[in-house]
Length: 426
Image (tube, rainbow, N blue to C red; front, top):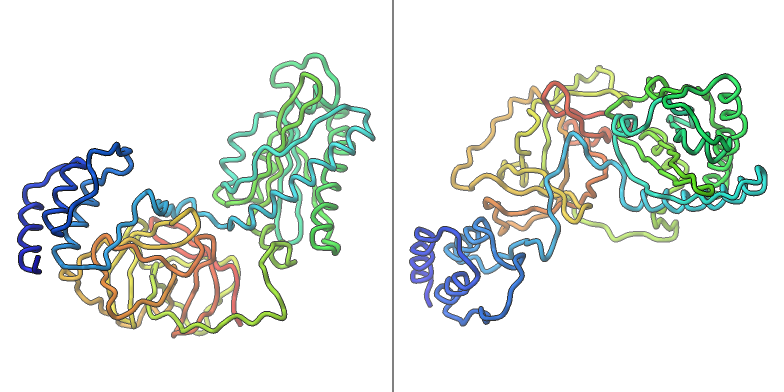
């Protein structure tokens, strides 16, 4: 079947097609390709039936005689829209490493509580997740004994459900609803519960890196967790470890939260598994010719550029990101995540409708979402998914005059994209 006939058949079918079932799809494939389709009499799962969008993309690819077209369906890769307001800032490996430490902490606490306080207790890890501080605070009952602390460059929170404190540790038979710990109960919590538990946390983390960490400092107790989180931004994302504590018929939760700066301190101490080997030299790669740009801002040569500073870009949040190949505008796309880990964009523009962007040089600093190498034959067609080299938890690159000057975290401020500087490259 020659190219003209394929294009004519595809055009006719696209004009008449609405929502096709699998048997109709088989007829489409057989008519366009000239080859028998798969046996449509076999039972198919609902996930194997193409959506109208996938049908349109298939027909468009065949109309253009694109033999390299391969749809990314739910059966191959998991794709989801990237949430800029609640991004993943920690990698799967970092979550796994902290989960291993959490298991060690739970085992150590079982031994300590049983031997020191003669309480038959079972402590185990419920979950290790990354979430906003505000989400954690909303989930905590009030009043509940809790303490904030500073550790290295970051901050953390420890909270215990009243049921664990009163029933499991103090052995109370009943407690009034919304009872706030009195002075004696506060001292018991700080001296005999919080202090030894945090010492156990400290010990297990230092064991992992086989060297001493700085001590935890500036401990602050309160029965209302909202008063202990004043030094942590409500929208700041951290890692929450949740333990289940059971003693006899009584059980409840206790939580340990580390903010992003605390996790960054762990990175600086080589706590996380990176697979680095001082004797291993990786193969060199060509620099990427295709970049995905979040937005731009102006940075004067003598202007301050320091960690924790936030710069607002010229791009409104929610607008597609711009894709450039060889410094030439190639299209725009929505940020997505593949397999919950890899950064990517889905092109939303059509090549025939592109208008080249003008650059007067005023905004001289770019925020780069990701990059990769693409061949000249690669087509930035609408619906095409461009997978990038970066992990979705990697910091974004900040580039001025063609040079990387720092790394940052994407934020949304004043309805615009922004970047919070995490590291400055001198």
